[in-house]
Length: 438
Image 1 (cartoon, rainbow, N blue to C red):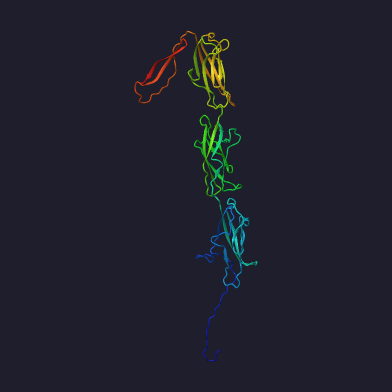
Image 2: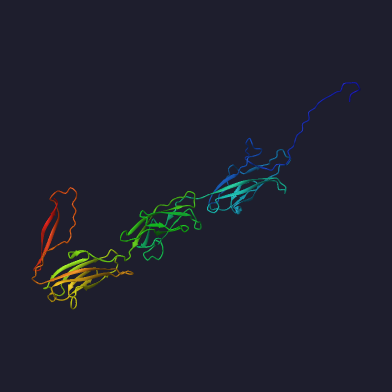
């Protein structure tokens, strides 16, 4: 104090107040990154990768990393130990695959995982200060991606496959794996990267330039080839197709090497037999000859050959019926003798017993295949003349078709026309004339 009437005495001093940090912030994960607009650390995730079907030797490596946290308060009297633990995650069974060291924060893999089953883990990581019930904590997401193993292309069991299809098969009919047609040809590729119990997702691509075949709908990892167009063995006996498999189980989608599918068309009896034209031919399905009455019984007066565009695996392929179409009293003086595809027309009796004249016969050839029996009948003309009779001249060929190229020189021969005459059993042929350009 000051005496009355005296001036007051003053003095100043500086007081420093230190604000001590209280334990009011939970831990934060490192590295703590800021930007100009942030109040605290920017949120981030710890990210790591593992390879499927393998167990990593040692802790997982995270980026950014390693996993670490520190107390969010500074200069606190006592800094609690920070403990780490997983609280939840996707998939729910993540704890079967990973565990975390509560002190160091190191994450270890417990068992292998398949990418096809779990491509990624997303787990919530919690850092807690101390162990009291009201301890402060922070959380962050840990993302672990599962990298697939994809070292190999899909592959087939063989590079060449054989299939069979019956001609005339309806659209949608499968190609068979054998001529017996008991089961369809199944084509299946495998992926060496996958284990036996893993699902192999694959698509197949077929290259058939003819468009006769397509792929059936895929059945899991298998497929079949089915008919898409007309099948006729007489037009095409064999098809060669190319095929590849492209995996869709992995992101790389490797394509297999191309394989060959050879398809053989199995024959169906859908064509009648036919007679091959020869010297007795006088028209379409017409054959003729002239004989004299001095021929003896058993003489072969005509030979014909039968063929069929359908395959014939048996020894006996054809049956024949010969019938006399010209009215004749008594039994026919002509008969057929056959050995498979060769048929001979012979005299049953001496020709002297056969009245002179023209005889018309029908010769039917039938195949013996099942389920269809197909036939063709031709007409045979046999003229019987006396021993010393002379036949009038006939043309060796009934019809001529010839072509002359543009620019053919004048006088060039384009056809030679012949006639023949039967004199005393001698067949005499001469050139009647020539056709030429003018």
